[in-house]
Image (cartoon, rainbow, N blue to C red):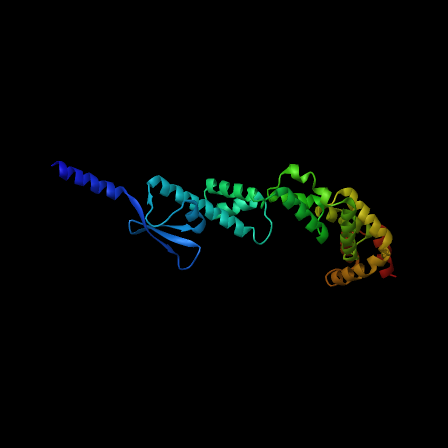
Length: 281
C-alpha cells in the first residue's frame, strides 16, 4: 500500500512539473519563438524576453514564472508598438498612450512602455512642442494661439506652452501675418476697404495671431499695397448685381435690391446712391 501511495504522489509531482521540451523559431518572424512545455505549445515569445528569463530546452518553470514571462511579453509588445508608432514622426506622450490604448494594451503595460521610452529619451513633450512650433513658424500659416490649441489637443501641458514664443519670435509672427494679410486683401477686391480691413482682422485672429499683430500686419499691407478706391471697387460689383436683379425687378425694387447687396459688401450708402443716380441719367 505504501509503495502504491508513493507512486501516485510521484506521478502527481511529475504532472505538476512544467518542463520546456522545445523552443523553435517562428516561421513568419525569425525574432520570435514558440515555447513548448511538456511537449505542448504554451506561448510565443520575443527574443528579448527569451534572453531576459534565460529560457532553454530542459528548463523547469513554475506557474508564477510562466505568468511573469507572459506579462513581460505583453509589456515588450507595447514597447515595440510604441517604437513603431514613433518611426514616422515625433509624438507626444498622450498620442502614444492613446495609440497603445487603441491597440488594447493594458494600462500597466502602457506605463512600462512609457517608462522605457522616457529612459531612452524618445519622448519629450517640451522638445515636441518646440519642434512643432518651429515647423509651423516656417510654414507661415498659423499664429501662436492656434499652435497652442493644437498642442493642447495633443496633450502638451500649459506649463510647456508658456515658452512657445521662444520658438516663434514676434518678428516672425508679424512677417507671417503680413503675408497672409496680403493674400486676403488681394482676394477681396470686390468689397469695400473698410469691410476688407474688418474681415482681415478677424481672419488673422482666427489664424492665431494677436489683435495687435493682426492690426500691424493689416496697416502695413494697406499702406504698402496700391488698392482700388471704394468707388473703383463698387462699379463692377454694382453692375453685376444690377444686371442680376433687373431680370426680376424694375424701378424702385431693382434699386433697393441692388443697394442691399452692395451694403452687405460694405460700401457706403452715399456711394451706392451716387452710382444708382448715374444709372438713371
